[in-house]
Amino acid sequence: MKKLVISAIALALTAFATVDASTTINPATEVATVQQLDQEKVAVKPEDLPDAVKRTLSADPYTGWEVSQAFLVTGENNAQHYEVELKRGEETATAKLDQDGNKVE
Image (spheres, rainbow, N blue to C red):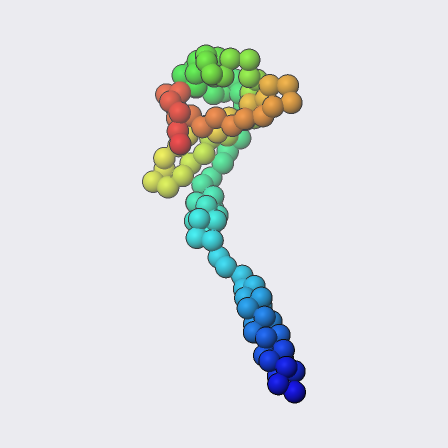
């Protein structure tokens, strides 16, 4: 009888220890979602990109990459940058550049 009670207690403790599968919210994910909602993206034709952006995209490290899509992104405080999707064969990459062709993080 004593073994049965000890086994039942051990089983109950094991069940309580493994049930802690609650959903947690990752603050980094939540912030990223909010930031995306605050940005406005407008499609831009590659030939309509500013000359400074075109010069940057024709130099290293973008040599050999082809512009597949481009967007003018307006964020908080009306800060604008260009988000340019690049393609080289099967590879894809995204470059974020300001109107002067400088890299934006």
